[in-house]
Image (cartoon, rainbow, N blue to C red; front, side):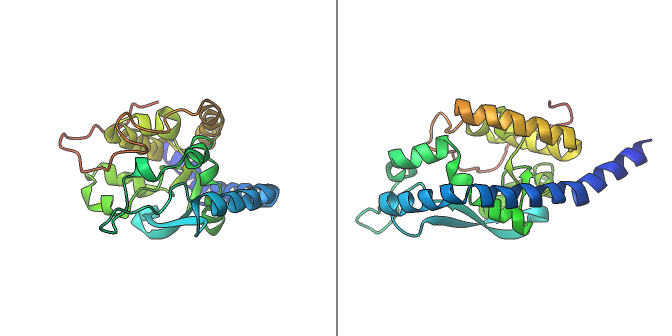
Amino acid sequence: MYEYLDNISVIYQKIIKRLIDILISLGAIIILSPVFIVLSVLVRRKLGSPVLFRQQRPGYHGKIFGLMKFRTMTDERDEKGELLPDEVRLTAFGKKLRSTSLDELPEFFNILKGDMSFVGPRPLLVQYLPLYSEEQAHRHDVLPGLTGWAQVNGRNAISWEKKFEYDIWYTRNISFLLDLRIVFMTVGSVLRRDGISSETSATMEFFTGTVEKETDGKKQG
């Protein structure tokens, strides 16, 4: 029985989920093309060039890929030539892009390429890779996503440890119905603009590693 369910899960992850990702991302890129154009013009005028923010992120099994977003910050620097803090460079326009998640739209191209899935753990910084515990590293057992279980359960308003707990639970319980549930919950979160920032940062504090032993995340959700 369990072997049968495992096989169904593998088929969903490897074939059905990928097919859904291709159809959704391609359709979204075509339908939202006017939005892409308007946002590109606005970002160029208000924040400068380049319009797209590209950053190396770890994906499936830690493989590095180039994540694409609309930029939300300026390149303002201090007298030493170093970038100013995020809260200084994040403009009112940038905050609106983030609060509405419009800055995430270019990630549909990452999904179409196969770097990401529509639903999965969010791709984080490459510098975090050596800081994960053995348990936390399992968040890379599936493709990273545009939205995920942690995003609809607090996003940046919860601790890193709680985020990873949700991520790991997702990798062990992935299914079509769960993905559908996350999609509907994402719509609600975006409309309510939940968890955009942490309590002490304009975005989220840097992850510096977990001191205490992580729980296995098996009973989340």
